[in-house]
Amino acid sequence: MADRLSPLDVSFLYFEEPTTPMHVGGVAVFQAPEDGFDYDRLVGLINDRIAFVPRYRQRIRWVPGRLANPVWVDDENFDINYHVRRSALPPPGTDAQLRDFVARVQSRPLDRSRPLWETYLVEGLSDDRFAIITKTHHAMVDGVGAVDIGQVILDTSPEPADTPEDTWRPAPEPSWIELVAGAVAETVRRPTAAVDTVRGGLSDVRSTAERLAGAVGGLFAAAATAARPAPGSPLNATIGEQRRYATVTLDLDDHRRVRKTHGGTVNDVVLATVAGALRSWLLMRGEPVTSSTTVRAMVPVSIRSDEENGHMGNRVASYLVDLPVGEPSAAMRLHQVSYRMRAHKETGQAVGAEALAGLAGFAPPTLHALGARLASGLSKRWFNLVVTNVPGPQVPLYAASARMLAAFPVVPLAKGQAVSIGLTSYDGKVFYGLNADRDAMPDVEVLAQCIEDALAELVETVR
Image (cartoon, rainbow, N blue to C red; front, side, top):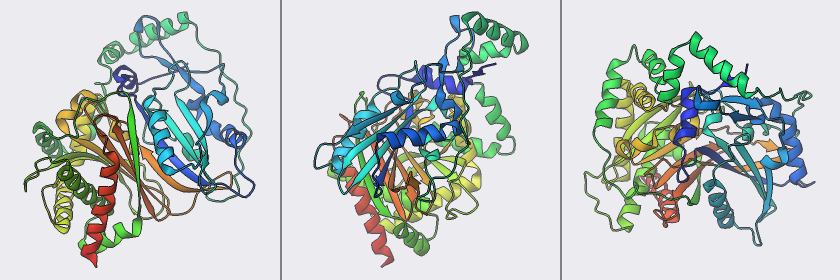
């Protein structure tokens, strides 16, 4: 029997609009190996590894009459050359040109008649580099254990790992009669299925409520925060279909030094850096900033037993945090952020925030994708922007002998959000990716520079 999309996953298809494509992306920059790297090499690599992500050869099939949620079916006409694409930057192949290309690629929605992913090889980057851009629809990110194609093509050694022979053969697609019969049978077997389908995701509240059985106080704490509308901000605006993209590369050791001196966590340092950057950006825009000015961030946090063990985390907590952008002192901003994050953890508000997300039909599933799995219609009321922070491995990774130099996330925008900020730590660096609406954020590069300056301001407090 074909896998049926959950109400949560199908909600990403229903909520998708031209201005809010529901896919998460990434930009990885590589140093070309001595023997070079080309399109055929990337296609061969993905062909060798795609068996590890079966969903990447499946497409969505809708049930006639919408009697039930759609199902995943094998794509009998799967064409890897459609999904793996090739492009090149004109000379001189600067990072700014790459960012412009990323913005154009990530602005376009995915083709729903095919498996919901795309990968781009971008050649012509200066200093003998190339980039790999990925796009994956949220409907495919069906749990914390979900794996992206960008992960399975990477190795910890320049020598590619051996992979088993791929024996995949597409299963025949069900006929429309079989789809209808399956929907009717499911309704008879589970009468609530029809209601769940209409609600488009609200059924996830039940499973969320079970997780909240021992944390009622946390639910009320998060509800109290969300009940207060997010402060008015130019970060919330009517958005269009086109994007701008900016990046920042900082040293992880600088974040760690600040944490060691002032306490808290590396993520606290990240949020204090973002708070300082937003303060400078608002002042440059001539916006009013007082001592009480705040910006509310939705902060999905990857949880691990050891935050510096070099492995990707696979547990997620989410917080609603009021960033103290009105505080002029960098050290004091960090202390306020650390206090608020610690208070959230002690009161169980992390669980409460997840419950509130579930009430909107969007439960937090995994890492960077978490930030966009929220009801876009409610995001403007609850928070001003999303800040996702994913700890990555602190050892070099390779794709067919090409060493990965950088890994920038692309976190999609919800309705009413002018910018989202994602960051990934990898091999001693922290890579910030800023995805912004083209018209609402013409100065996203200014905000990127403010992030760099804000961390430098925190580092000065260490010296």
